[in-house]
Image (tube, rainbow, N blue to C red; front, side):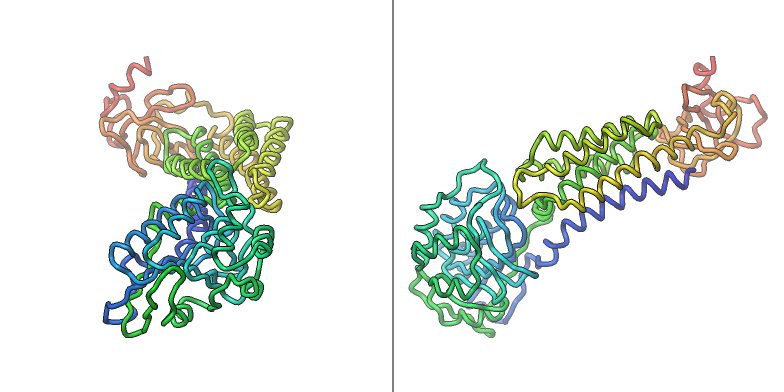
Length: 459
């Protein structure tokens, strides 16, 4: 029984770590060290490079602005942003465009290749348009610009502002209309006069830019392998974590797993690792919920569904409460996000709902029944019996007595009792046994350390 309980705890913690790793993988994969990578020994030319994938959210925008500030302060010759983004969330796209255009250091934006189906849409397409050098790989797509962001909590450019930006970039109103409503490939972008060059990666881009005079600049770029210092930038640890928390499925899974851990702890003595992991997980999910546009009544239904599952576990029933919990969870999951582009896949909702159902209705119910002890043995029968600590008593945990696992509270003089500590039951309090240190050589009835602490309970 204890092994099963410990296995569930480990599974919950591992599930949280796995969810965090999945959400962070895309960010870590493209991120390089902040110290930079030298492409040559001389430092007459410095190029700053920042790969960006995922939504343009506050952590990413803050990093872009920081790289621009560093480039201007250090006298860099060029800033390169490598983009693969479907748009922005909770960012002021107009302000970002203004910052790019106001940069004293030329900015080149390359769409791709960061992965399959590399594209830049919404706010990312605007950023690409505002760049001094607009580049794209052969399989990249730019657009549509609408929607610019997936929320309406910040001011964003209107359609006529986009037209002005396209015209300033060398296109016309027809190109603006096409880009506003649809995605254009490099050939179409070139025909519209918007693409400066096509490049299959950062190295080809830098080679192509050698000798080029960017728009709005009167100086040619001098980028040669023996004269250039390339510095790669990446999001800091905190920004990476917050950026990962703006992935729609990731937030949903974090909320579900985190609340599941906290509800699991309600049925356990004390507050363990699973509870702490649940608090952290729910906190990260809370940030994501504040960034992405969610339907709050749907979020409430997901939470209600989990609470009803906990009630179902407590009453060990399988009936109307189970059906209500499943219905609430599924309906809330399917309507979780306000934007269609963020909608959760049906298979993910079904898989998550099925996992939650099995965990609460079957796994948790079986564990609670096992914790109740063997049939025909009441908790009062355990007074005076020896046992062994199976989970740290701090002060509560579990002890193994006569082949069964029981909830226990430590009453010894030390702060806690480690796993493997011999104990003896000296009193009971409800369904919890009160235990003290046990020495097999001590005669029965003789006082032991901590016995005084339990005397009032026996009386």
